[in-house]
Image (cartoon, rainbow, N blue to C red; front, side):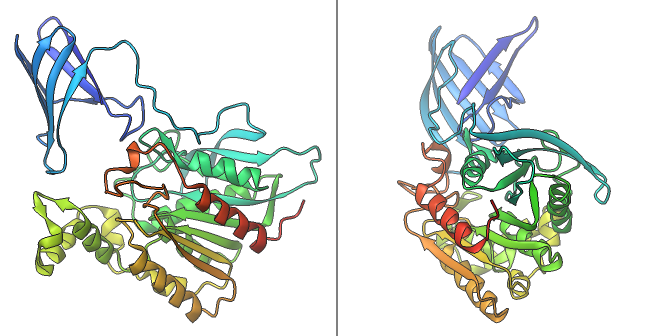
Length: 389
C-alpha cells in the first residue's frame, strides 16, 4: 500500500494507491484526513480506515481496518521516494516477437467506441491469415490487460496465444480506458453485444481467418462466450476458464460460504441467511438483475463447437465441483463430440498456483498464471483448431 499525505494551505489531504489490488496509477482519495502531532486517521467512504501513531518524521505505526473482518492488519508506513517494485516475471516486455497494435473501432450496433490491443504473429506474406481469439473478462470493469495486483492476466494470455499462432484481441470493458459506455448499468446482454462487436471488428482485419474465430472467457466472461456462440454460428470454438454453469445466485451463495462477509462467518451460517443475502446482492446492479433467471446449462446444451473448460480445484469464486460437471453434462446433452473438461490441482480462480489459497491471496502471488494451464490451452487449440499457415 502506498499512502500519500499532503498539506495544502488550510488542511491535509491524502490518497492511496494499492498496487497489489488495483491498477497502478489509480489514486483513491480518503474522504476524511485527521492529523495532529501524534496521530493519523484516514477514512474512506466509512468502510476503510487507517489509524496510526506517528513514531518519527519517516515512520507511522498503523492499523488498516475495513468492514470485512479479514482486513484487519497492523503494519508500518515508511517514508520513501521510490515506488514499490512488484515482480511479475510473466508479464511480456517489448520488443515483442509479434505485432502488437493498439486499436480503436466504432460499432454501429452498440453505438460505442472501443479501445483495445490486437496481437498478430509476424509474417512476411500478406496472404497468410490466422485463426483469432477474443478475450472476455469477468464481472468487474477491467482494462484490456485484465490488470489486478500488478498482474496483467490477459496480456500474458495474449502473448502466449499469439506465439501459438493466433491473432488475439483484448479490449477495455465499457467505461474503462478507451472504451465508451457505462459498465455499472450494463445488463448481461450488453456484455454479449460487446463481445459480438469485437468479433465483428475481427472480421474486418486482413490478418484474420474469418472461418476460425473463437472466444476465451474467464469467470463471467465464461458466461458471455457461450451466450454469444449459441446465437452466432461464425464462432468456431470456445475456451472457458472458471466459467459459471449454474445459476448466478447459487454462485454467490457458494462465494459467501467461502468468505467472511458482512462481519459474519458465512460458512457457519444457515442456508436461509445465505439465500437472503444472495437475493439482496442479485438486486444490487443491472448486471446481476439480468442474470437472475439465466440458466447457463441451457445455453451450453446448444453448443456443438469445440469447447475446452478448465477450473482450478482451489477456486473459491466459481467452485470446480459445482460447475465442471454441469458443463460436461450440458455439452453431452448437445451431443457435442469435441469438448474437454479439466479440474487443475492447486490452482485458484485466476489459475495461479496458490499457497494458502485464500480469497485475498491472488494479488500477492508472483505468478500470474500457471504454465500448466497455458500449455493445456495451447495444446488443445493446436489439436482442435485446424490452423492455416
